[in-house]
Length: 333
Ligand SMILES: NC(=O)c1ccc[n+]([C@@H]2O[C@H](COP(=O)([O-])OP(=O)(O)OC[C@H]3O[C@@H](n4cnc5c(N)ncnc54)[C@H](OP(=O)(O)O)[C@@H]3O)[C@@H](O)[C@H]2O)c1
Image (cartoon, rainbow, N blue to C red; front, side, top):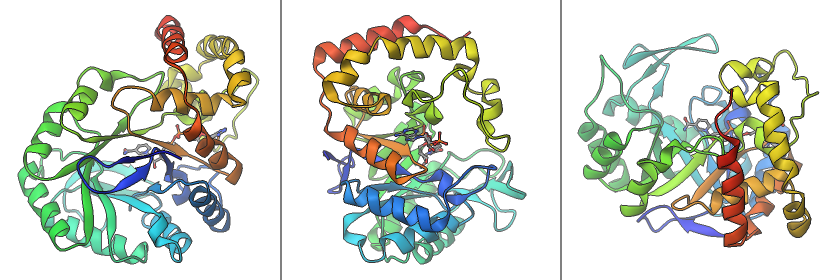
């Protein structure tokens, strides 16, 4: 497994990261139970995946607690990336809708961030967080200036409670402002074969300023693993049963075009003895500026499969050919 630094920090993390959103439960998801979650985390570490991405909001602390149990005796093998800014303990911050029956707020106030960090340290059973990421930028009316949030994060870094600072879901202007006010190491955003908007401005900024780019939903919720065929029915509790509304590539007519594209890559699957999921991760890793790719996994076999993509080195010709096919796919209807 290759490793890449988290920006200018001295921390190196595996290029394939374990995404843990579903370990928190919620969203009516078919999440693994805690025992299986621990097995998935152990399998990830065994396969050389050090980067583990979580958040207090994943299951309101539950996801962090299970990860804490899983890494208890292997803390040195893990680069734990958690987040701050999604708040539900009281009404501080700005309303951000309801999640799993609780009112949620976005709060990047120093007072709530400090409480969140103490909670995360306790949940994760650790005395340091490798990477603390601002989950989402502040919104009105309680939109804490970026300068104040960064001052708080720098203080936490000086105290040794966190080792590096990251952000997520920001515009390029917000990215530059965070970067101007402290030691910014990483930026997390959605990026995949089907969602490449960050190439316009976010990625060039990260490259130029040595900020690690951590991508999420690079497997497009399973679509880019090739396993979702035209006959696939999702459980009624699985939000993907109705995903066409939000993710148009799930619509049958678009999915058919995607599956046709995959069928043109059979020779690559043979050459690298790999799956579409692995080819997807390898292509994503080869894109300029992408340093780390988070892959959600609901089983040991999925995370082992995703981890093994870290060793596939596509040739320049193969990368260009795949990029061309993706371009020719066009927009979903
Ligand atoms: N910063 C943010 O705001 C933000 C937002 C979203 C996500 N994230 C982070 O990014 C991570 C990744 O995103 P994600 O989990 O939402 O989506 P994802 O990685 O695009 O998709 C993960 C899903 O794909 C399927 N899958 C994964 N590996 C597979 C394999 N090898 N073969 C077949 N199927 C496979 C599994 O679902 P099934 O088995 O059910 O099909 C899995 O739950 C999250 O877990 C979270 O840590 C951050």
